[in-house]
Amino acid sequence: MTADPTLRTVKAWPFEEAAKVADRVAASGKGEALFQTGYGPSGLPHIGTFGEVARTTWVRRAFGRITGLPSRLLAFSDDMDGLRKVPDNVPNKAMLEGFLGRPLTAIPDPFGTHDSFGAHNNARLRAFLDTFGFDYEFASSTDYYRSGRFDAALRRMLEVHEQVRAVILPTLGPERRATYSPFLPIHPRTGVVMQVPMEETRPDSGTLVWRDPETGERFETPVTGGHCKAQWKADWALRWYALGVDYEMSGKDLIDSVRLSGQICRVLGGQPPVGFTYELFLDEQGQKISKSKGNGLTIEEWLRYAPPESLAQFMYGAPQRAKRLFFDVIPRAVDDYLANLEKLRAAPEPTNPAWYIHDGEAPDEPGSPASFSMLLNLVSAAGIDDPLKLLQYFGNYIKRDLATGSERSSERVRKFQEWSLNRLEAITIKPNRDLDTGIEIARPDKALMFERLCKHAVAYYSDFVEPQKRHRAPTVLERAALEDLLHALRALPADADAETIQTLLYDIGKRHAFPNLRDWFGCLYQVLLGQQEGPRFGGFVALYGIPGTIGLIEAALAREASA
Image (tube, rainbow, N blue to C red; front, side, top):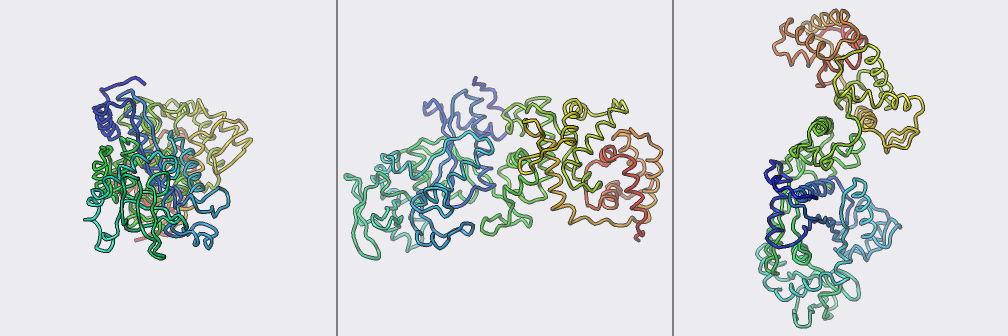
């Protein structure tokens, strides 16, 4: 990749972070940069895992554009950590109870599919990352400790044992302070990761002397070769020092850990990486999301209701600001992504989130001819319960638009027409569906974004919109305006475009003296669609069809008027 130093001035957080990494690498004289993300494999990958790897990937790509230098992304699994408690979401819990305290890679796999529990969860992590196409190198803590990759760094930590303790001790309570050591020896008989005080540290021989608190037996353990591991904050610093990590981001809850690990890294003689602190997510009530509480949105849930590109869009925006991560943010994230994708097609600007999601180049397929919000409203108004029916509806709409010879269609719709009319016909005539992977047809090509959006829209509507739908009767003022709209729509030609209809709606709202035009459009959403908000109503009418909209108004006028 050719270096472009002018990109350092791009006003986008990935490039601002990448410029810091570029400065660090230049000062060190290194020929490449090492980016790292960490993973605790006692649980399964989650939506935060996706966010951290995606954000780090964007900084990494920006670094390559600025410098032209190669880089690596290390996905590091702390699989040598001792199992503290049995997870709730695993089989064979009773079996795991007998292995508490042992490294995750020294515990049988409760699922029975891998050599160890750690190996099973590592495989889940790798499959998770591979699903999204991330470019990374996987690293196992157990492998790194046992292979000797950390031996020199461990010996160095042994030499400065008391200095490392001096960094951590002020942060501990009296009892823990009396026993703390940055080293956790592996018990030679039980295999348990021991958290015990060191009676002696012997840098010359590279060993620790400690005592089993239950039996009183005294042991001398090498710090090398996987016979011990480092405590959490010391372990993080050890990694930075031993591997020369240049960049790592972390959540706001780890600010103190980052600070302490950075101090330990300097004690060892290294330089902490460039860091980036991202804010944590909040639930529907504004409370911090907790995996144990289950009060957030899982990645499986997001991917049921929206494409992964929309999740990336959500993760890109304002990472240092707390954001609600709940179901109602999904439609906005999808529509933001679709809008940014169209901008990327027009101009590959690195201030556009879609530029990072697609590495600077838009995919070679047409954009969606409708927003996700519009699809949801179409599903709602037409009572569509099958993605194929939604696709067929759009196929009929496109045919109708082409038959009228309309030249008022948007460029986006025209491009979609050129690409997909035959495809939509093939789907509706000879479908071959797999709703887990998207709607596919007999040909082996990948499902178009629009096909996936149809699947997601039906699922989202069914689970979240339909249960909340409440059609209300119009007020006296609203009834008069709706009757006016009814007559006006009957007088319009069948191919009237969205702007013509939207202008008509504005005129009727003004003519009937609504205190605020938002009240008029609120009436259209609530009375006709049974929901609080929606897309531009003129666009909805153009897509749904004037006859169908007339039917919605007639049904609304048949309801008893409210005061």
